[in-house]
Length: 240
Length: 285
Image 1 (spheres, each protein chain N blue to C red):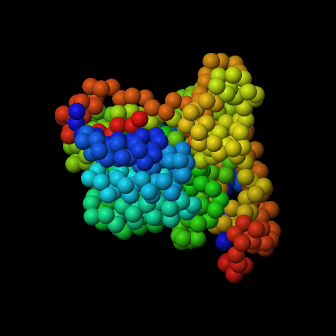
Image 2 (image 1 turned 90 degrees about the vertical axis):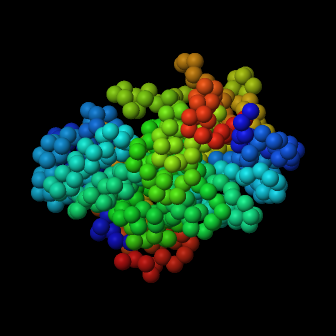
């Protein structure tokens, strides 16, 4: 099997240890788009500890920045990037806005940029101008699940980071629906997704999973992934 | 804070909307460019329609902004840039754009018009604003996903930028940039799942009625003064595809609010004290 970047929904020390010892794993993707409590038992504190473990290993770190980097979490994000920068190795940051990308390029010389799957507006089309803009802004590549887009990226000298799945979610926005509905922050229920909503008048149902409602991932066809590796030298991100 | 400069921005879906909007309090009007906006084609304006309405709008001393907020595939780029140049030459006041690549190209080809960054571009922090300012952008339409303190932080860091918010309509409780609930808003008919009634199930068993997923569209006209105090310049009414009578009623409410706060602008610093907890008094222009 080709080397891949492992991206789990939930991490603990044991899982990190096992990934760091797995010869197929090229790098580990850490950081939740919305809520670190969902990904780590002790939230942001664990993100620092476990990322440090990966940085000490031979594996590369891929940091998934929050979808919304705002004044509320900017210092926290900077602290994580500082930790990555301290090690004498290249790391990667998956970002969703250009201002954040700009200060990463300015302040962190060892961190490479990847444009995230969710750095998009309502539609999934990307114009040629947009892809050229990524290049202009020093991006290494872009996360995608689209074989055709992988080809366009490669032709422009950008690395396609091909994901084994499309993150397909339905969100309530920046407020956790579970907390909104029950009044409790409960990562265990959130991860288990045991709560769901159903319309009264038709058969439309979605699970409540913290900030996320509905099906999280749609798997990318295997042949697309194989073709992206073969034809466009894509790097593979496997999310579980 | 300059209340005299506060703007109410109204949407036009048809040529016949223009005069009633101008006569009922709109300081500026925006319309979609046919083929390149994020709304149904039927509510867009063709190049010739824009040429027809522009002198009328300027005759009232008001402005016209053209929305080009769909991502444009490569093969249409040349045509679009030619249209942008033509619209710039005839006096379009600003282009509303969401694609960063297109923003970059547009600022290099236009001579007179301004560029406003669409709410769909996702501006979340002051670094985004600083970068866009360096690119030559005149106005940021703030993401409707931002909280009040985040808006204040952005404006405090980059005060020499124009800011606009979606003040009426379209402010959904859902993240409107990323929500994938079935929502056929891009088509001619709407089926909005966030507005439906839901039951809550726990492990598949009925556990009661669920709280609403999506709030009804926001209407902030009564609290407009707070946003003025924060430094918001433009207040947009959303909904080019809505019934015109509805848009007109929203516009009248907004215009009434603007009048009210303009008459009571000295009270705004007092209101802001509770929002900002700092000495705002010295900052009134």
